[in-house]
Image (cartoon, rainbow, N blue to C red; front, side, top):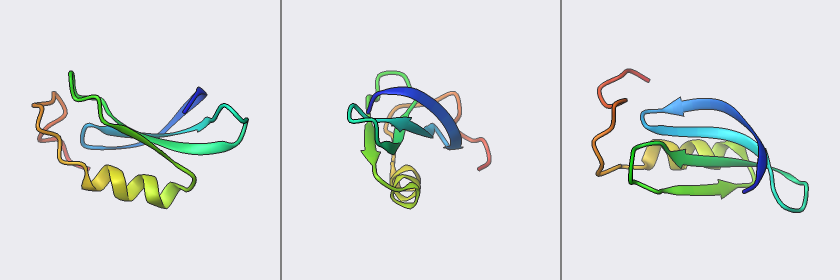
Length: 69
């Protein structure tokens, strides 16, 4: 996605944030924060980013595992 990242919410190890893409348009980024996972995706709307974050099943053990949503 790009720069000017603003964290909005976290679902387990996945963070969702708002950012500007290289064209200067606003978008949303969902990214797993577990070490060595590397999963991330960018979306044009917040709802799609939330669905992706809730649906991500990380195979890496995370320090956030077991915390409530």
